[in-house]
Length: 162
Image (cartoon, rainbow, N blue to C red; front, side, top):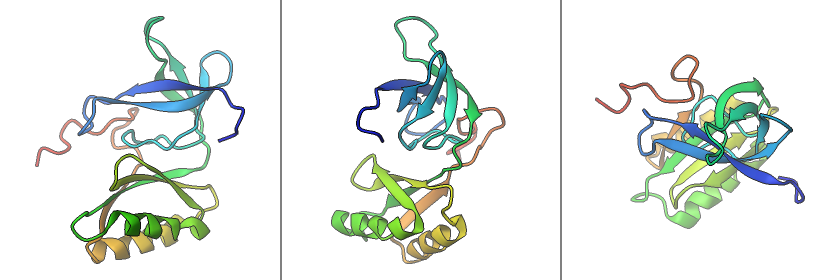
């Protein structure tokens, strides 16, 4: 994030995403209805840091609502949940910081839930090999964040109903 950027909140409705009905994200208004995302999404699928989206408020008293992606940034998103029974909070942060050389940064939602941002030049295969190992060791659960439903940033209506 650039120090002098004027950020605004935009929103995405997520009626089928567990744990939330929507998500607000920081963005830079580019003039009119395009905005550039300035944080890594914690719940929405198929959105990434730096993507340019079209967002329009449903009324003057509401945040602009994301309608579509106008331009992809090339960044990718993964989400990681550390198992608090097996990994202390400071150890979780240490593990995530170890991914920096793989062009990965992270944002924190809770003590144990993080959104990872992979820069365009990051090798997702290498990053996933590390995460797969952490999962095998019982430290984490993680998910990729590509689209789950065509033309939607939401999860499927059947998700979590197992």
